[in-house]
Image (cartoon, rainbow, N blue to C red; front, side, top):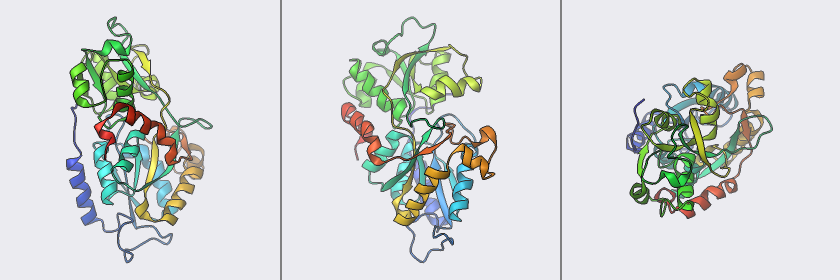
Length: 325
């Protein structure tokens, strides 16, 4: 697997600009005369997401979500597999994206940069669970030179993406607290180590396992469960040398250009019907296929903007440029 270095959202933003021209009903920001469904939604709703792992068909993991939205709104869902967080944020701000699945950091950054959003619900791993996850600092199990974050100094370190919550922001805060870096700026991080932006959590973990990075970061479920179940990692192949505090869960958010009534409807739909049991009962999927997004979520629970104040605090701690509008 090739390591992908930092990318920008330029191409994707251009793509969203094209969507605005070709899909006149794509966004709730269209004129009042634009065609709507019987339920009052745009005929086409755009849902955007980026993969947490390298994926050629991210859409498949969103199929139950798409079917639910289409049933409840009467709209056709246009799914966009974005290449990075920046493109989704810009698409939201431009009004070319109606719904998005964000990591916590990307959600906060979207708001900082002017996107007018409402959280529809945060994902949970199992029924009754609380939303949230942790960032792991990782190294190969047989790497005796890396046993704590302080050992990351001077090493080749894999991050996920400069706009990733558990793959960059919280790791930056951990490195600051450990005295390895002065701030969360990419310049300070580059002065303390050789950062490599892998592009996906799985790519980061695989690069560590392959020795392309001496250490790095990825989120808990990807390393503990997903990659082991897929056979990409052997149990015990990597060791966890650091864990972050609990991070607010990844979240579905609606562009408020859809209108307050439509957003309220979607919030109720997501909280009440977007879970594996309800999706299976509705005939949208069966068994494990009812777990959605590439986080393999069981369901969604209510979320508020205030739930992400912890991310905003880490933004203050790190002084990350990505946290600024």
